[in-house]
Amino acid sequence: MSAQDAPADGPQAPHYALITEDLVKNCLKSDKGKDAVLQSYEVKDFTKKGDNYMSVVTSVLVHYRKGGKDLDVSYVVKLNPQRSFAAMSNALTEIFTKESGFYADVCPVLNKQLRLAGLPDLRVAKCPFTHLKRGEEALFMEDLRARAFKMVDRREGLDEKHCVLLLKELARLHGSSILYKEKENVVLLEKFPFLIDFWLREEYSRDHPEEEASMNKLFAQCIESTIQVASQVGGYDKLVDYLKSIKDTATDIFKDEVKNKEPYLAVGHGDCWVNNVLFRYDKRGNPVEVMLVDLQIVRSASPTIDLNYLFYTSLAGADRQKNLDKYLESYYSSLKDVLRAGGVEVPFSLEELKCDYKSHNMFGFLSAMFILPIILSESGETFDIDHMNDDNMDEKMQESRLHLLKMMANPVIESRFLRLFDEMDKYISK
Image 1 (cartoon, helix red, strand yellow):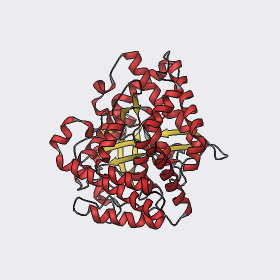
Image 2: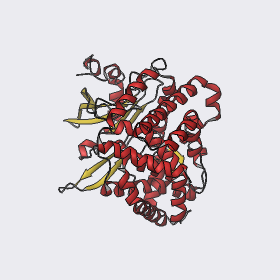
Image 3: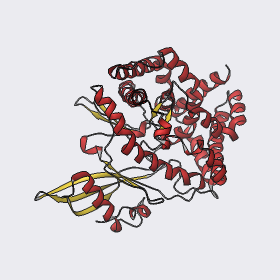
Image 4: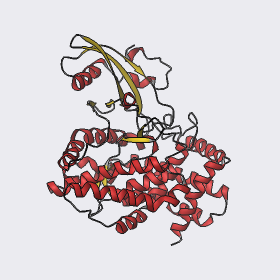
């Protein structure tokens, strides 16, 4: 079956046409060599609703011939979802530019630093081919399922074993970029301009006021959902008043949180939550290896931005509170190991890291407000961004809000939100 043969009523049918025979051929030759001859290919969906939001993710099974042998290879393909939603217009172009730039330009120099320090390469999927024509973007990635990597159930979140393993790899990502800065004496944003978020660029507000207005409205709607949940639960009057006061300026808070400052400056994943990491397990079911995927919001920022994002979106509140010091110490120890292997000292102490983490808690809180409703929803009941546009945003957000309020009847889900509310309440009372 070719891309054109995909079922017209399939969940991602409009996007199959972006996977052309020429793109598959180019990917195959880039990955397997110029003597690899394409025989046929078929598109096979494997993700569920709620697994992906910024792009359409599917897979392509490729049949090819090389060296007189008939062979198969599978690729995960990320496609532009082509949404008619102003807030997403530049964001969609941005995520493909960022992720392709990471694999083509950033990852090689970071891996060089790790190798010079006697350490293994970053644990990320290979990206043999990218196509960046605006509106038709496609990234062909290694299919890690072939190496037995799989996702954690997003509703369960990460336990201690998974979290510590992931923190070690995040430390290697952050640490290798600090090594690169120090060893090569470079300024990350000068070397890789795509590491700055598009909405932080001076020209964005000037050139795209309608998109900025749409994004501001979307953020305000998400905060309104949290306000209604907190009001329904009761006992959080101070928090509700605070959220009402920031509802229309949430994007400004995000901008301030991710602005660059030394010495807390590194290449960060940007979107490190439970869905964007894969694990491989031993025979006893213990996680033994982790892979970072979906580096579509890769940025230059404080490492504690990634840590806040991860802890507040992907850990149960009780685990986050109980093990916070242990997690930060584990992360710092791994970061120190990477830097010292490269002959560089960590530019901040453990206590300074903890202070910086706390200073960015609001980033974690707000991120959780936007992502928890997605994480905790059953597949098929998640936020319907595929059919959202500027005209029906209010209607779609109200549907999502009503679903979220019903979800609070589940004690496990209620607990996740109550822990968040308790921490926020304490934070704003300082």
